[in-house]
Amino acid sequence: MRVRLAETDSTQRVARELAEQDAPDGTVVIADAQTAGRGTHGRTWISPPGQNLYATAILRPAIPLAQAALLSLRFAALLAHRLNAILPAAPLRVKWPNDLVTTEGKKVAGILGEMESRDNHIRYVLLGVGLNVNQYAFPLELPNAISLAMLNDRSMDREHVLELLCTTLVDGPLLPTGLDLWRSLSHTLGRQVRVGEVEGLAEALAPDGALIVGGRRVYSGELWEAAG
Image (cartoon, rainbow, N blue to C red; front, side, top):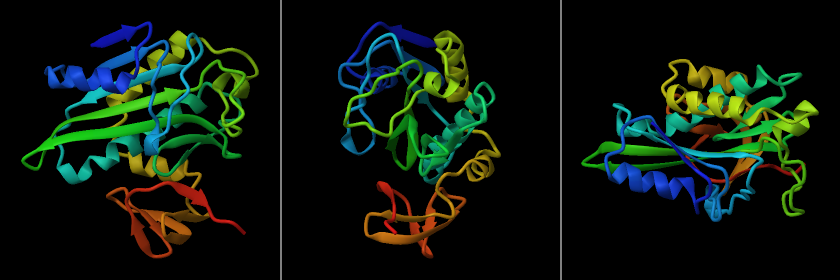
């Protein structure tokens, strides 16, 4: 099921309400514009109308609670892979845990995963994505933002990209080879990084989605490339 809105405050908020009303697995909420879009770490996601894509999927996976973090990693990897198939030079990579960036590190999409559980079981997962499609000008505070159109040197067919996005939101999170695909497209592994107080070489992605940094497991936090 798809729910299309001209404008809303946040697709994540609408999807949460629908999930609490027992909306089925695979429901996707899509908005042409958001007035209060959210990114990771409490940031605002700039969401102008008529240019980009903003969507949240409701997932009800029959998997252990400990595997919930893998859903957004797998989705990010498959989305990058499928977008690369329609872009010149296959420029997209995944930055841990699930941003889509170019080989130069410019951000094309952000993914926000949220989960509700009860009695150690997943009730539902909300997988939200903001994808820059046809935006050419970004605020000064977003110097590293870029869009698919800018990478393609021409505007994209938003409906075509939307279909690709919605399909990937539904089948990407459970992709059996998703972590291998993530590793092959990683913009993070092999770099000196800092996540919170942990700094060192990003050595590997563990089977549970943790990033191994300098021999230590990191499960969450904002990742920065270390200076020098």
